Amino acid sequence: MIRIRRSVRAFAQRAVEEEKLLAVLEAANAAPSAGNLQGYEIFKVTDAGKRAALARAAFEQYFVVQAPVALVFCANPARSGAKYRERGKRLYAVQDATIACTFAMLRAVDLGLATVWVGSFDDAAVQRVIGNEDLQPVAILPIGYAAEEPAPTTRRRLEDLVHE
Image (cartoon, rainbow, N blue to C red):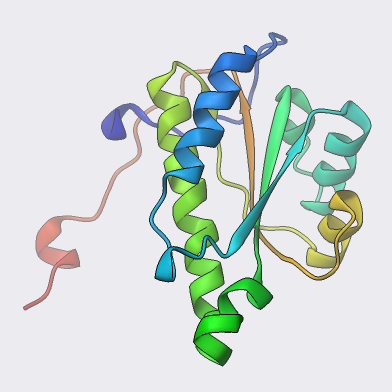
């Protein structure tokens, strides 16, 4: 599954089945987190108008609108900070959100769905779309069925990546 994952930026006009979406969300919920606090929140955006607003917030990345659903993963600094103070607010909540998003992404691929990690966006604009200014947007994950088959990308050699 990990090796077949691709960043898909073209989505078919086909709905994602509710049971598949639920399985993706359950995978995110199963992700490990600092102190098991789950210092993140997930916003499910299915409304086309809100997905268009997310696409604009993501600097005109309009493939976000093509996907029938977009999940917005946000760090919840207050939740992590209650136990881990400043490091929890600044780091652990962000790590929790990224791990949850990764679990969701991999489960989506396992179910035959396509995704792409969107990390380039205007935080304040995303916060307006989700209706919460207290959370830190970390990633937007459009999910749908692929309308393209991107070629595999090259990866760094382990010898260049792993150090002793």
